[in-house]
Amino acid sequence: MSAAPVSTEPGTTTLETGFSEFSLNKDSMHVENGTVTSTQPSSVAQSLREKPEGPRKTPIVDPVESAKPPTPATLTAEQEKKYESLLETVKSWKEIPAAGEKGGAITESEIMWLTRECLLRYLRATKWNTADSAKRLLATLTWRRDYGTEELSADYCSPENETGKQCILGYDNGARPVHILMPGKQNTDPSPRQVQHLVFMVERAIDMMVAGQETLALLINFKSTKNRGNTAPGIGQGREVLNILQTHYPERLGRALIINVPWVVWGFFKLITPFIDPLTKEKLHFNEDLKLHVPPEQLWKDFQGELDFEYDHATYWPALNKLCEEKRAERKERWVKGGKVYGESEIYLKGGNAPSLGQPVSQEAEKVAETPAVAAPPLAEEKKENVLVEQEPTILANIPEGSEGKAIEAKA
Image (tube, rainbow, N blue to C red; front, side, top):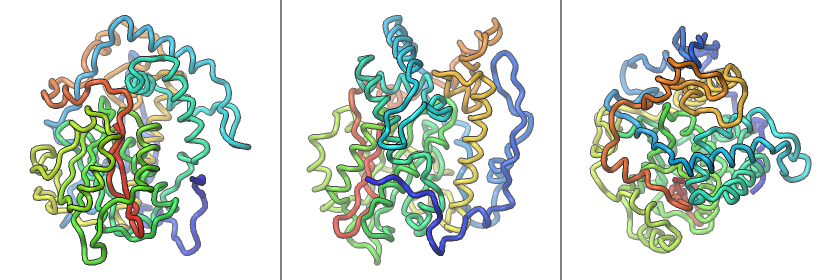
């Protein structure tokens, strides 16, 4: 798969012009006892929180109040020792061995990506084998450079999403961002850009995760349309997507909600079942009442929810990308304030109630650190879903589809 071009395609208008009223003024931040608090509302997020007249056409910024991420598991002494060992290993990396001229010194964005939670996800995915975790982490950093993950732009991916075949809308009961895939709205032929578009949207779903939540909820609607009768994923492209997601996005799938499954798609699932970890299978829910998983007020009416939503590309696309750009800028500012350290806390970076791991921790901050990021206990099902797995394949089923269809696997 070739790296993503960063220039805008001929005839594509920069989307920011349609969303110019939302600026990226930096959020003033105050640091006390290692905890960052905002002193003014972020401009994009605050604007999107306003209730629209008529159908909503923009992303939802916050989960409902009752939606809570699970309380982080406490590491054993042995697990903490393995984490510290892995942290020392990644600190020693001075260069990333990417292909050709892409190789070179590790960048600040790559160091910021190597958070405490990131390292723990790779440790869980390898059953706490530090050598394997280090190998996979370095391989992912190399892949991100070769693939051009950070260079994938909204303008480049925009044509793929003009019909709204993918969108991030609302949060489930566990405060996971809901990444919706609708193969019936496929509007392009199979190409590298289709897979790049999926990667781009997974990255945006990660941007939308709230403090304390590391996983996404995948909602795949296989309902056919008059323009697309066959919504079955293509095996070849499905394998490519599966490999990317299970290799480079471990422990990212929290739940997959799959509805309107036609017989040909059932055949696809049977073909890939041998490659799916048993614990991942437990996260797949077929043709269930979606209101059992997503609060009705954040569930699209198209899925029997109460949310009046209309996908308008000229409105939704720039809104999503401006919001995510703002969130990334805020995380970067917090990371800089925390000392630009390896193994920084994602809860801190996302503005949660936790101190930076790069700053001296006072007695008061220690009390904050000991307080769970979320007060409400996780549901029994949530606890079950946090069981460690070795390599969670993902079944993000839908994306590209044309002659061969498209497949999208989610990643756990």
